[in-house]
Amino acid sequence: MNRKWWHDKVAYQIYPKSFYDSNGDGIGDIPGIISKLDYLQDLGIDIIWLSPCYRSPLADEGYDISDYYNIDPRFGTMEDMECLIAEAKKRGMYILMDLVVNHCSDEHEWFRKACQDPDGKYGNFFYLRDKTQGRLPTNWRSYFGGPVWEDLPGTDKQYLHVFHKKQPDLNWENPQVREEVYKNINWWLDKGLGGFRIDAIINIKKALPMHDYAPDREDGLCSMDAMLREAHGIGEFLGEMRDRTFRKYDAFSVGEVFNEKPEEIADFIGENGYFSTMFDFNETVFGASEKGWYDAKPITPDDYKKCCFQSQARVGNTGFLSNIIENHDEPRGVSRYIPQEDCSLESKKMLAALNFMLRGLPFIYQGQELGMENAPFSSIDEIDDISTLHEYQTALQAGLTPKEALRAVLRYSRDNARTPMQWTNQKNAGFTTGTPWLKVNPNYTRINAADQLEDPDSVRSFYKRLIALRRHPDYKETIVYGALEPVWEDRHNLMAYYRKGDKTLLVIGNYQRTEQSVILPQAYKKVLLNNYPDISCEGSTVCLHGYQLLILEL
Ligand code: GLC
Ligand code: CA
Image (cartoon, rainbow, N blue to C red; front, side):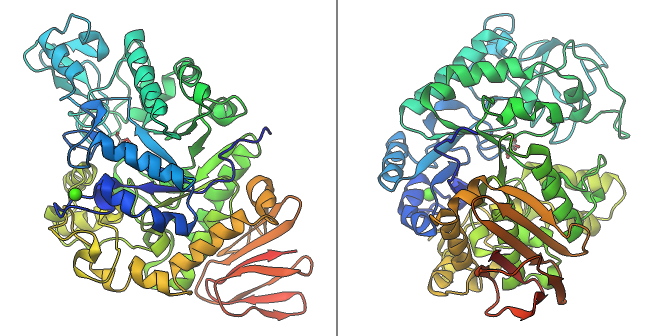
C-alpha cells in the first residue's frame, strides 16, 4: 500500500452551530472555532471536518446550501474562514469542509432560475417532471418523510428531492452541473483546504428511467434503497470528480457512503479509489427497520463487536475505513452502545479504545472526547431536527401514544449530538453568553471540558492518551498499518483483537459490568493503556474488571 499523508492522522468533527459562540447570539461560529484550536491541538487532532457553514436557510442545518461560495453570516465571514484555515495550518492542522452536492437549497440561484424557466438551462440542473393529476412521477419516499416530489413553484412541473423539500436534487447526468461542482471544489482547495467530507454522495446516481418500486409501508411509497439498488454507474461521476479535483491537490476526501456493494470497495477506497476513505456505518445502521426508528432494534455488545469485525474483514487492507462512534446524525455513542445503567467513566473509556484502535482513521465528534451523553429532551417541542420530527409522526401513525413515540425517537434523535458543546460548569455550559439555539444538556455541571482538562482520569485525558499512543514512534506503524485479527470472537460480552505490525498489540475490552477472565496466548511485555489503576493477573490468566480495557504489547 502506498503511504499517504493522511494515513496516520486523527480527525475531529465540528458541528459549527453547536461548538462555540463568540458573539453571544446563541449560535456557534467560525471565530468561536478559531478560539478553540489550541484545545484541539492539545488533544492531538490533525484534521478538522466542519459540518456546513456555507450560506443556507438552515432548513436541514446547513445541508441545504444557497451559495457555495459564501459563508453564512450566522457563522461568520469569508475572512473568518480564511483565518481559520491559516490558523489551523500554523498548528499543523488541516480543515475539511462538507461537500453537499447531491442537492442544493431551494433558495439557491439555480433553483430560482429553474422556477422562472423550467425548460431553460437551469431547469436541467434539477430533476423535473410534468405534473400529472392524481399521480406522482414515482412512489419513492424521501429520507425525511413523504414523497420525493414537490410542485415546482409557478410552473406545471414537479421536482425531485430525496431529502427535504427545501433540498432539490441536482441532476448529475447534466455535465454543466458537474462542471459547477468541480469548479467550486477547486475554488475551495485553492484557498488551502485539506479536503472534503462528502455528503450523501451515494444518492447522486439515479436509476433511469425512473419508475415505481413495491411499496413497503401503508403510505404506498418505497424506501430510497429500492432505487439505489438498481442505480449503476456512479463510478463514472466519482472517478471524474476525483480526477478533476482532489487528485490534482493530493487532497483528502472522506465519503458518506452507504449501500456500497462488496465488490465496489476497492473502487471507492482502494489505491486509486474515488475517495481517500469512507465512513464505516455498520454499527450505526444495525437494527434499523424499514418501518422507522420506533421499530429499530437496539444493539448489544456482541452485535457491536460483530459489526466492527465485519467491516474490518470486508475492507481488509484494500484501503482505510474512517471509524466513528457518533456524528451529527446519530445519538451519542456512549448512550447507544453502553447499557444506560452501566454508562460510567470506565465503560466510556473502553468504548473509546475499542473503536479507536481499529484499523482505519479515527474520527472524534465534538464532545465525544468528554463522554457527552444523549440529551434528556422532555417534549417534542424541544426538538429542532427535521428527521426526528418526521420519525415522531411515523411513530404516531403506527399507533404509538405521544409519550411512547417521543421515547422511541429520542433514542435515535440527531439532536442528541447537536446540543451545545459543554465547555465549562458555568451558565449554558460556557457555550454562549446568550440563549443557546438548542437546549444545553443539563449534565454539563458534571461533564465539561474545563473540569476534564484538569483531571488525569477524565474521559478526555484518556482520549489524549489514546491519540498519543497512535502517534508514538514505537507503535505508530503497527496501529496505523498493522493487520487486525479478532481474538476470542465467540466470547460473550468480550471484544478483543490483535493489531499486528512490527509489534504485536492486544486490545481487550470486557464489555459488561461483571468480571471475566481471559488466558493470554503469551506473556505481555507492557501495558500500554488501562482504564483501571491495576491489572489482576494469575499466571497467564487476567481477571478483567467490569468494562476494563487493556492495550497490551505482547
Ligand atoms: C447527510 C448529512 C445529514 C443531512 C443529509 C442531507 O446524511 O450528514 O446531516 O441531513 O446528508 O444532506
Ligand atoms: Ca455566534
